[in-house]
Image (cartoon, rainbow, N blue to C red; front, side, top):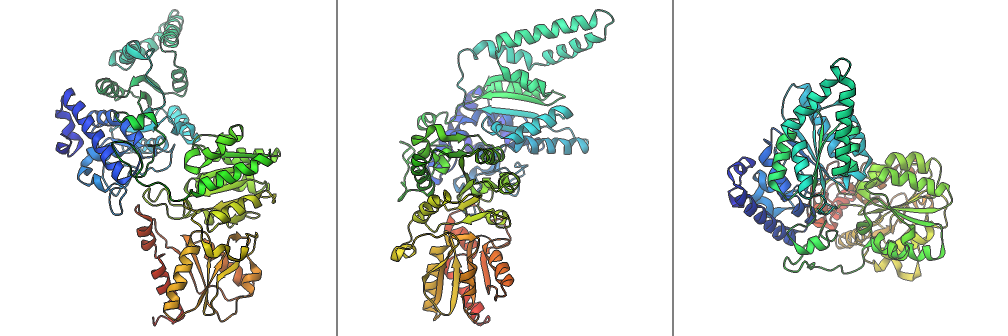
Length: 624
């Protein structure tokens, strides 16, 4: 039946039994595809019926649906003409794992970071109103996204302005308990019906009746609130209605008949409304239901068992960081670890096993996390905030004003720095150096492997100012970086490969690439030195001054070339009166797509072969 769905309009001809069959087919296709390609599984299994109901009730793409975060849009993609390409999900050149405006007219807004959908949907709704159009705008928001402050800014604005907007709260953490049951369903039907809204309107007008009108209105209104508080016992009702929203729910997010009925009646609201939907993460796949966090974002796995196909060959950088931090916390009671809803992704679950009382998960609230860390540091603690590089962007103002201007000893641990891979442009960690390097007093470090990361972690307790450590997901050891017993010394660079014809300055994940590039250059008759630059700020001015003037310098970085390490080195060398780099090799001025890391490195011109060719052209004056 799934193969017959070419657009949402095909759903209208299906009866309830056919819809149930279709839902099961969708779940099977989700499991099969994500098992092969990797991706976000649990959240998509939980939103199957809700997505079907949305596309049966609303007329997309005229009506516009914005999925918060966007990782829960796989079913939406299947139903909007992309089923034939669904097997290419997250593959280079294939479907994105998130909504893409250039991928389909049904993707009205691109989302990849949490808590943005209500703001975006409110903007779309206001654009509709300015243009005197009548279509519906719907934001589908997970309960996790509501831990982000942006949601509340948008809710406050939408409720205050009375803009017509539908917010679907996909609550996938709460089980559908018996006290929700039939009584709640009945009350939801009543409250979401046309008769309920008509009655509410008539009751409001009672206050216009002379003498008895206002007392009668207060009495009826108070009785309504009392019935709601007794029968529903749901504090969220008061919260959303106080903000100016109509509230429907909670309703069973796997009951398509109830979903469609509620959505149909929500279309009649003249004010913003919230529909509270209860779903189960991983619904229909036992392994994902039992461990939804494991199947939130997963690599390829065996569908029958849920076992992952490839186990990590070595500990991730996040786990190395967390284990090292836990060791330090054994000896220093001031250490506190902070995460913004990513204990597993950042590896801090390892820290929490040993120091649960000093592990703070603030939810999807990076801005709050950074300023709270500043407060902890001002109060005498040593906070470590672990966050993906791409999510660090969300707390730039707090990092700059609250941490760095006060020169507080907060350590930002930026995981997944560099090209992010299959998650695509919203998840590439390519902008952190642009953000960090211009900030006065900030120390910026980038380890070449897990051993250097451990050394940097231990060093952070010796300094009393802000510090950021950016590192890639994998921290496989680079043997050449540790020969001779050399150890990390803050602010110092060192050569790990000798050469007289050129100098390659590299840090982090690019150190290995620099070594490979030097080997290719040697085959072409050029002896290039490779310099390990673990401290990106402050730069090693003494080392730079010691490079012979006739030897060309090249910087290599897995970061945007504009405003990155190379640009910073160029500025410093010019300031010192030295010859600036012959070339600064980094990611060009573009957004990279999604796909395997090596393919994206090729697109960025950062393979060893490409960089060697580029360097040879510079050295030979373009005659190579």
